[in-house]
Amino acid sequence: MCHAEVNAVLNKNSSNVKDCTIYVALFPCNQCAKVIIQSGIKTVIYMSDKYAYKVETIAAKRMFDAAGVMYRCLFFEIAASIYYCDSKDLTTYFFLILF
Image (cartoon, rainbow, N blue to C red):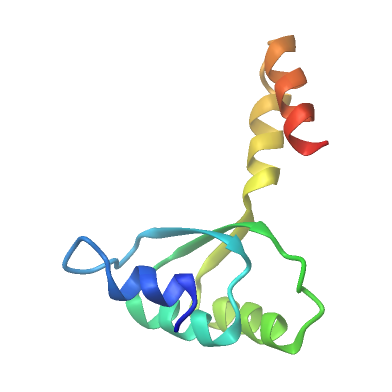
C-alpha cells in the first residue's frame, strides 16, 4: 500500500511529470514529498492541511521550500477567484461549499 501521491507519480499517463502540478486532498507527508520532488513536480495544490502540526508535514514543507516546489491551498484560490467575481450566485455557491 502507498499514499495517493506516490501512486499518482508511479502510474502517470505520460513519460514524465516534470514541471507539472499535483492536486491532493491532504498536504503530503515527508515520504510523499520526497517522491514529488524527485519526480520534478513544481506545484502542489492541497485542500486540507489538518496535520500541519505533525513533524512529517513540517519536514515536507521544509523539503518543498529547499527544492523550490510551490504549495498552496485550493480554497484560498477559490476564495480569491470568487472575491473578484460580481456574481451573487457564485458567492452564495461558495459559502454553501464551505459551510
